[in-house]
Amino acid sequence: MWAQEAKLGRRWVGRLPFQGDLLESLEAFAAAKQVDAGWINVIGAVEKAVIGFYDQEKKQYDHLEFDQELEIVSCMGNLSLRQGRPVAHLHITLGDSRGRIYGGHLVRGTVVFAGEFYLQELLGLQLQRGLDQETGLPLWEKHSGRA
Ligand code: ZN
Image 1 (tube, protein in one colour):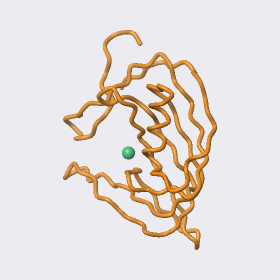
Image 2 (image 1 turned 90 degrees about the vertical axis):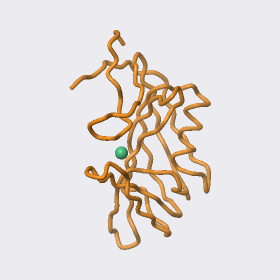
Image 3 (image 1 turned 135 degrees about the vertical axis):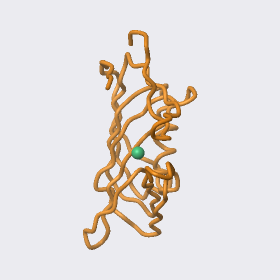
């Protein structure tokens, strides 16, 4: 286990574009504002969704596609750099018209109907993603220097 102490930076509250890709809209915003690390929360609704479930044995994501309108009951995660670009790692909980809940790792292809987000920039971190051999996931690599 390791951790780095962060300082709070800028923060934004905003609205996501209608029919934009949920993940890509947030990453584009972070890139435009030059945010290297942060924490994200989103609520709203989607027209369709794609979520992933990581098969730990096969070391690959299985995708679940929902071609239906769903509420974003909760969506949260972080922002860090991968190959120098901000990437968002978000998990999402979606609710249908009967209140049933689905959830998983958010992947591209989730189309926003309406979305309100909060982004908190975190400063003083050295968070770079690289391939982790044990899990097969692009996890944060331990940084030896002082953050
Ligand atoms: Zn995930």
